[in-house]
Image (cartoon, rainbow, N blue to C red; front, top):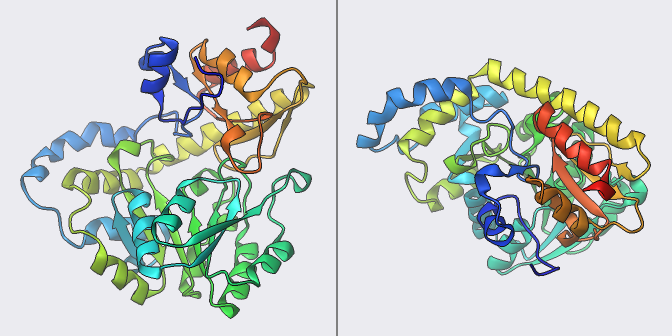
Length: 365
């Protein structure tokens, strides 16, 4: 194996080939996907709708959009759906043509890629360990005083699991409004936070026309293969442009029906929050009790950790865990991080215990 090999949470086939471990035997603490799997109601009822594939879905997806609107508490006219949030990012960039984007990082690399494909340039505003990777708004606004026309935020942020509160987001939007800066907010992980109302920016779309919020079903609803994403925006002109430029029927009939089922499964949503909250507290308490790691306060379903052992790197730790069938995320490839950082998501108790055993006893594994 090459010593500089790095793996994304979806690289199970690659790991299978290199390590000789069957992908079915790997527990991925890297993918950040709900460990409960897909909605229980969805498993039981989706097959009853199989005949839906014999007809085209509603071109406007009115029923799905209404269901999403009820779920996020907004007007269904503020909702646009797409083939995963990635398609919506692409459409947004194509339409707005940002010349210079400021990305708050370390974060997801797809933002920079899409801006580049649209002919724009990306610059990073660094979250720092000195501030526990929490956003320093006064310093951010200084950076925004230049020729930036797009600000990109992931909230909660990946991989730091830090948040921007709604009050802070309002402050950012007020400043950006005065500077004619559009704000793209990725809320992929927001449903995992303890106090959703204090974090989500969805209510702000009623008052600001310079914000668009992206969400999907990949992480919280454990359905990355469904490729169902949606955006919330109060700028109807922008939404019209997105709808005018997007291909029709990018969401298939079964995915549209599945979305409606998942968004109304309150029992599943509560069980998810209870599990993540409990395991987040337990895992962080156990890791913090030792002397080998610094755990940055997590708000999503994953935590960023710094290795304090002098003779241990994130690459070493990845190798030791994967040989036990457990996959963490080596964060050395993220901007502003190095080979002392790794990320893991919270799984079921027995799976978390297996990971803790390795992390707390790295020399024995």
